[in-house]
View 1 (spheres, helix red, strand yellow):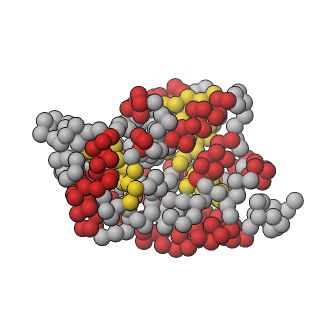
View 2 (tube, helix red, strand yellow):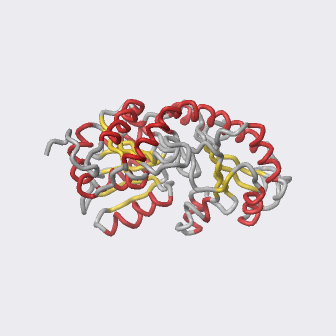
Length: 357
């Protein structure tokens, strides 16, 4: 019964514990439990705390698998779910009070990078008697500290920046010792979302270069965003580090950099500009994607290799067209994760591919 003893790797493992401890120190959390994937972390963080009859309030801008848990799985088990425009604090306040058990959000969101005012949503959630869970995967523990802003729980897909080289699946839940022990403890032990020791070793190696990689990727992402913003065949660029982002000032308050991911619409007219490129559509996006040589097509992100995907047909394909439209995810949207290649080489690859639009 002694939780400090290593008797079975589904419960605890010394290599996994070392990874948990190092990530805990980077995040500034009291405790951490590692999981087999990022979605295992999200699922465990929510379900260990919730009961039938309780209410969850979530931002509507969520990764496709997170949306499935919130919108489809939780209601099956008698848990009421309400999704709100995460940028609208009055919507949070109305949905949370009275008595919401838990709030859940991504900031920045995947893929359209909506920024949530974490401190204010945490205040509203606590006033309602609930806890706030934040998926911080786009920001990484280096660019944003949700716990310091008032959140109760932070979750990660360690598959992304923490590994950073496309080698291993993994996830993590960081929170107070009380939450990790009393709320998550038995759920984790008996449902088995545990991380493999080998993957923990790979993730430990990833942590050694995390800061170097993220710093370089952020610089490259900003350069790509500025290049795309001035390109005649790109009608919209979404990047928290650009003044054109509608929540630029909030991003500056919460994040130390704009992040490693850039989203943009291929073709179409720029707002107020009738001289834009051809009308943006799925076919134009696919021509662009097929023409890339250096950038790979993959749903992953945070990798040492630059990766691109088409959210409407991949990560968010389960959503109805009107649901995607409400989130700013049209057929023309592309998500690009900046890697470690040379900046000039990446810009040249993007320019060549855009000429096919």
